[in-house]
Length: 128
Image (cartoon, rainbow, N blue to C red; front, top):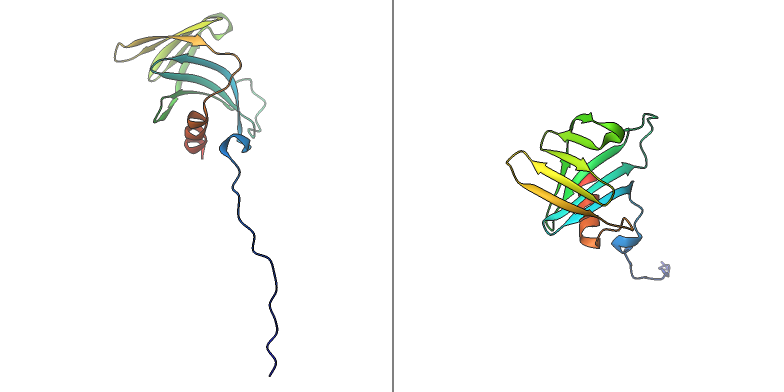
């Protein structure tokens, strides 16, 4: 009985780096402080046509991501947003985030809307 020869090539698997992965969101607004980043994202695979559909605010620190759950929107052009966890006052170059526990943060707008790779990976994990 003849044994057939098996031939082929073994190649090394090279995973894509985090920064080149196509994630299912787009950063719309980004504010930063020493305590963390406040990020408004738009889910790019969301199929609803309403203005707020697929938009989400996230609080991102060096080790975690928390979704801010909307309670209501007040004022012209949505300059004040109330979440179950905090109230957000938006300005052109700054935002003020007032947490329910009394802590208040002043955040600076960041252009371009680029997060460090570690925070992008945390958001990716949070959305998965």
